[in-house]
Length: 369
Ligand code: SF4
Ligand code: SF4
Image (cartoon, rainbow, N blue to C red; front, side, top):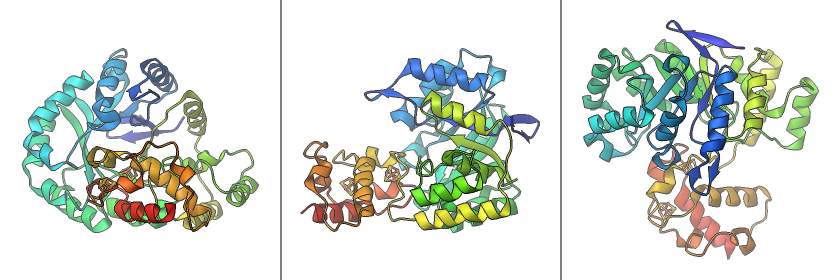
């Protein structure tokens, strides 16, 4: 079992993300989710990461209901201020109080500025929210203050220069694909410059690193025959001493069991293995790095199932065929297909991966003929 010390707290290195719980229709499947949480706690996981927007606003409530069955001191709970939406800055106190109520706690062990990026940096730099959160910390309602960032490294630096002296950890998207693609290596170094430990999100890149192409899988199997493909993504992170928390949005028991096994013992990569996964990541870089976070969907006036459409587009693009057969979107109801896109760009302002969604929809439409 791999634990990291953080200011007197013993954190199991694998934490549980709460944006991909099992569902029935649009609702969280409470029975299956309760079983997941129970197994996670029995397996040693003691960090749960929720947020205002996850599961359409239901995640905090679900966590409140399920974690209230366990002693408060047996888990650490993290949530975040939803500063990716400008309207929320006029509701700071209301949102924070609601979050505590939804989660059925009187304090958050960890609390973050959520998704710092180019479009909200100026809002975050206006100090009202920062002062409010410091006040909550003084009152013991926030134990540790940090931030999650999807912005570029210049944005991250500006945020850290303003608030780094009060922040205690930084949550970044880090995996062997983004090491190069999203300059995660430089981001890691930036956090080190400010003396901050690293919390990792998207360690398996929304599942993209759970299966590789046959040649890449064979190359990894030749190096460590006993290791599963997803575990390489975790072993890569175990090789970075600055990483103190790895969040995985596990959505079924099999995945949880496999991850618990991976974190039963620390097996960092050798220098040669490290280079091998970085090379695989470089080979995978494509133009549609959607992680299925679904932030965009709330903002689409047409209600398009954007991540689903992007997935189809990406798969069709990989095949190298110039046109896309109409049957590719057959399962999607009319009015929700690429031809319904207005090109308004509302989705792009909130996309943490900076995907040029409107351009892709236009190309998708063109290639559908
Ligand atoms: S650009 Fe298209 S997909 Fe994006 S929000 Fe506008 S209508 Fe929806
Ligand atoms: S397009 Fe962007 S915002 Fe939408 S699901 Fe994909 S990564 Fe998330």
